Length: 97
Image (tube, rainbow, N blue to C red; front, side, top):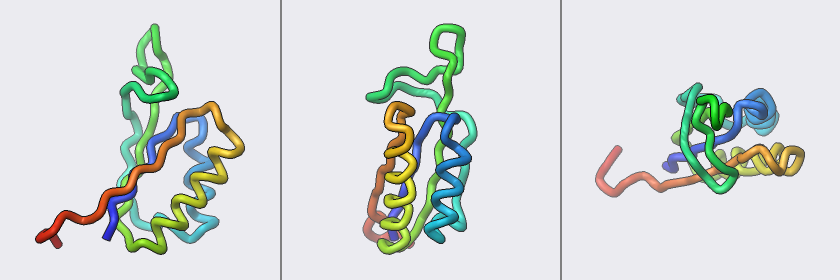
């Protein structure tokens, strides 16, 4: 099992979810609607200085589904290269089930 995290600007939220659906990936996920932080695309703090916010999707899945999520997100990132879209993956920790 892999833990896949998609973190992106709210402006592409619908695009990400639609692309994942098109890839038959991420049917079961956890959604964090308001994620703040600073990444390579700059701060997203939800305040007067840095008003934008991100969202995050977390999916536990097998490698094949992880690849489909990666493809879906890559398609959206290609269309919106400046929106701060990232995918991270972590393997299941040894001894956990």
